[in-house]
Length: 201
Image 1 (tube, one colour):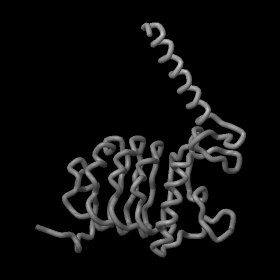
Image 2 (image 1 turned 30 degrees about the vertical axis):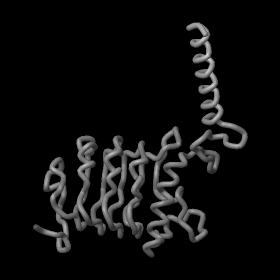
Image 3 (image 1 turned 45 degrees about the vertical axis):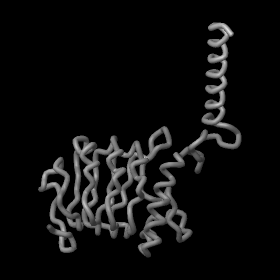
């Protein structure tokens, strides 16, 4: 088989691959939003982002901290992902999640870093607990981060240093974060912490 024939075969496989990808990702009659998205109320939303929001809701319920029903827009006594205070871009990706003082509890999803387009995250004045997931360092578009007045514990992950220069506003105060704190964050930005249960050397 000559070089020309080999190149033709490679080119043919490339075309087939592109055709398959196009068929999978493009809108269809069964999925007008394309693969990885779902249509809700005539708009397309990322399955990934909806999934993270559902995990936040489920964790709050698991820890017996039901979210304030003031967010229950359709009055069915159940908080659904799109009822959380949020903004989305034209690509169907979540850009803002504003859950200040809504009785939110439980832990943050380990994959919160999948919210790639998120620029605002306000979770202050709730009952959130546990560690801050390492994946928070993947939120490269984040500019505002409010985590104050919760029950977060453990250490603030060093992964946050990768996005800290982009953060215009950040708030960690009044949690239970233990030292050592990431060197990239000035101590005054850490704020007051309850370190009663922290292990000291």
